[in-house]
Length: 345
Image (cartoon, rainbow, N blue to C red; front, side, top):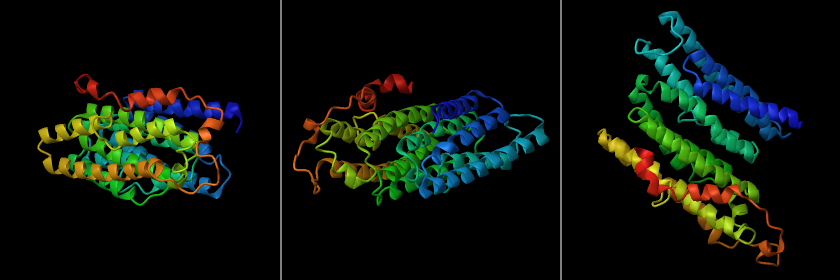
């Protein structure tokens, strides 16, 4: 694709999310969502293959349906109240429709079916954008109107997403699908705490992005799209392999790594609000997520699959690829737990 065209597309995607995040009225939020949606479609379909075309079509249909529901809510709300924003007087049906449409955009269960398939059919760097940057705008809308959301529906969406993210990733062999189910589970954690403490949702989103970016960076460095490909990386990039293992454990929420911080804070806040059953179920599902992350680590570092090369340390014979962002992000994604008192307060 033409570099100028790519620059325009990326800028439009960035500006769309920025407009949605900074807006306080519903029409600019909707415009920002549409700008980002229409800009990312060419990136999804850039690779000339039936799989990428299918992924772009699924993404467009799902996001367009959610945008249509949001536009319907905006029109009906203005007709009833004469306001361009949601308020306490807004009809509960409109609030529920807004919540469901944003759940579709985030890929929350039971509206999650498009996310693993779309992530699997697109390039790795576009998958990174889809699982990180594209989540910011819908979450910012939920953050602004969290007091108006139905807590029962929010809890159902959250617990179903945590369950689907944990169980769905167990039998996957494709790294992109594993990261997609990881995204579903993390979105469930963010949604669960939203009615009680939305600031923890922002903290969880920030740490999730800090963990996902270096993991995708590692996958892109080795072009590791399957678990079998990961198992051949031990003799190519041994140091990056070590960092990726630590990042995976942090994604699973293993203490004392950074990924433990949001889970610890969310469970503590849920217990303060007498949600012991919900917090217990989420903690159990976190163990399932940690299991398939550990399975990835086992495949990467504790198994030696047959290889065609005679040398066991290819990294000594190759020119090193300098990656300056990966060590920094690895440190941030593993060693910030001591700052928990400042981050939570």
